Length: 278
Image (cartoon, rainbow, N blue to C red):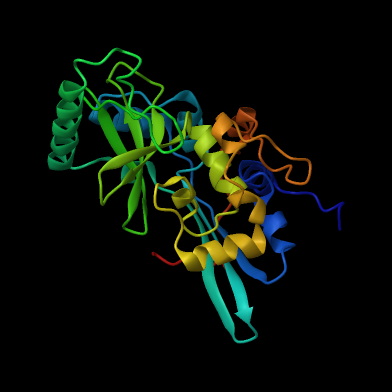
């Protein structure tokens, strides 16, 4: 079985997801692991997106979209013999779906930011740095900030890509908590955010591990069943880079894989079902 040669496309997705489909297939009660493959974008489509929004995509994110226009991976969990539910979900949107947050919301953030900065004007520079729950600096939203929505997490939070200004091409990734409009740092780069999604196995709402309010209880139960190490106070995660423990060797992405996607992509197999839209 080990001799089975992967097609170039299979090898690309295997490398992109760090072998996650194989890892999940070996987990008891996990079934129906499905990866929706997508055609790559061409350079013109990426440049059009950049020109429309007056920003440059970071290099790793650009290579990703020139290799595959996002992807969806989902899986089911068998709670009982006749109770199988689709719960696992990793979603990287089509580039066209990466959109600016609505203008009125951005204005609200700007107002909040200016209010907080004016209230801190008398403080020293070191004291003026606002930190999130995990002691990471909270972004300072100004008129030059560009905020793009990457994912909506259970209508409770949004994963956002923040550019400090249009001249920047190294946006950071944050979780915006919708109830309080507060920010929690997620990742320094697109590659790190992708690594985090994979390291968390696509467990439902995994991003909420890094929120101030935590996971829904049913999701936490799944974490405890399948990956209890991910709930251990995230001490490794706080160091910015997910350090691969030897028993979890699927945390490292080689950026060179993005160049390995074959030009002509094979058709999606007929037996690959469409994922749910939730």
